[in-house]
Length: 186
Image 1 (cartoon, rainbow, N blue to C red):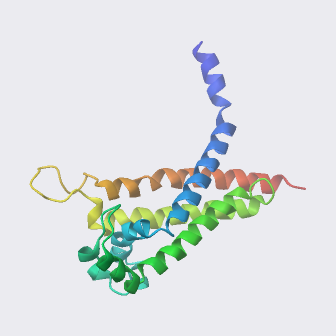
Image 2: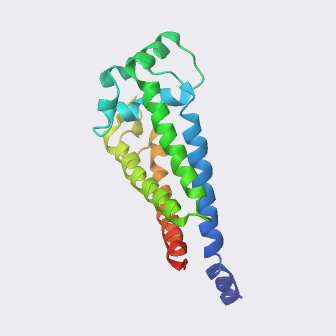
Image 3: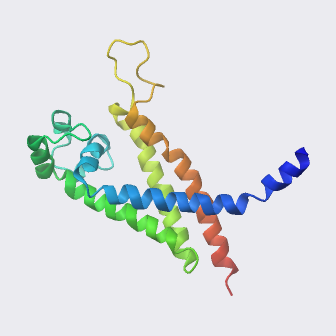
């Protein structure tokens, strides 16, 4: 019985690759598309402002703390600051890149080399995203009196970032699968 179960499990790899690709496509199209919505752009500002790789892309990286909007809240003064800071312009560009990566994965059946490149770009993007764990204070539970704060206690932002470890692995699996398909072509 265990052997039969293992034989079935051993054949699940092809379904796993399809599900990994589909999951990446859904996540990248959805999250990338949301970058055009201001609440989503407001939410990424702590990551961008604290990143040595990205903070130069906005006007006032140090001013974000006094202009953070809670999800679902509309604070016109904060929205005006984000507009002048370049937050939305940056988010639109990032969203376009993320959607492009998702669309590249959709090319797998017809243009596997493009899909392999898209997967590789997702792999690289995951490294940048994971770097936020080291650069963004909001990734860790703040010291507000509880003994459990700082490392290793992830805040909501930290949990959002940590999921990229899984996306990194999924991107390598889909990259390999697309590269194999490309190499099998006559």
